[in-house]
Length: 450
Image (tube, rainbow, N blue to C red; front, side):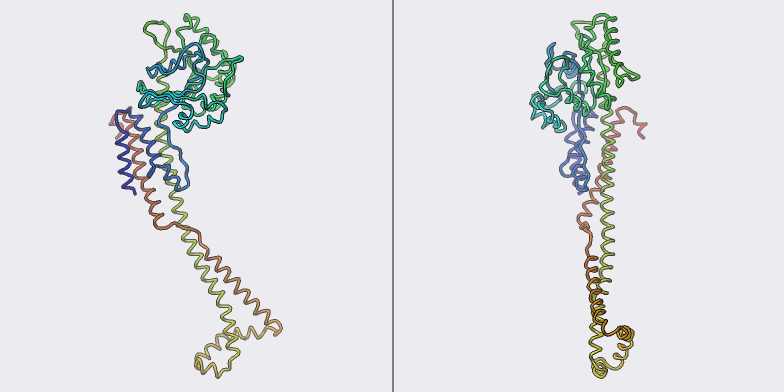
């Protein structure tokens, strides 16, 4: 089995290697290690009662904020294609996922959920399925091949009604995403209470994922106007205990336009670095999870083999105990039968049948039993015989119960488990080591790897 697995894994690695980045290849290889139909860790783990989830090949970045905050414009800038509709109106009314693929394609709600099965719980929010969509484009700009953007509906206060519970849907998605980018628009909607409420709730359990940006900073007027807007936003955030934290940062960003130069400091590259950092952390977490899952499978297989070994020992003990009890159960009636037969025959008949020496020896051995039985009053001898029969029955019943054994693995099953253990220990862990070294060589020199 291990030989077949090794060759198959090598073939898969060759098919996945190509003109892709190192991080992308590592995530794809790790994903393939899990989902392979014959030798994947998921199928191996299921045979020993362990449930594993495959790592995702891309990180998910959710963008949220008030309407016209520049979320869709940022996605278009990042992928360098016009994918998302932009404008002052609320263009994004549902959840739109933007990812890279082989050809340009637009997917509806059901197709989106088939592409992203981990998003299927979104169907529990009434009305969301009709407002799900995916845009697939062929761009490989920046690190887009490792990113799936989740563009959320623009948030507004007042009487605006959404076709679904937008607050709870964004909260659920935010808990699942790897990174949450919050865009504040300086043009009057930055202090949208609905946005701040959702941000505060997300911060309670996913604070490390949240990053704040003042978008469209070039449209905020002069530098003093921008500072005033940022002060207003910071003051509003500080009013909320959950968001009043040390080290708060809100870079100013805008989409660069060569036809419209601006003196405003543009920190949009900070967003790219944040995404890059999240990708690197995801690669490390994926490799670490691979090692932990290997240890989990190894422990489960070892426990199963040890449990089977202990079951075999217990079964042998049970069979020995059953044999002893069965022998005792048969000895009692056999002794009674011998006693009755010998008691009904004369000594001359016994000597003719067994011989003088054998008869003498038999009388010697049975003498204690005869004396014990004769010492019992005649009226109680029948009860004593019934008690011995009952004792014999109980002993035989206990013998039968003792012969009940625990199920054990067959020789073939034990060999298969041992092969799985060897595959995880020798192939998967070695693959994980090579992937980690490949990842580290991007940053450190070869002499540091020795």
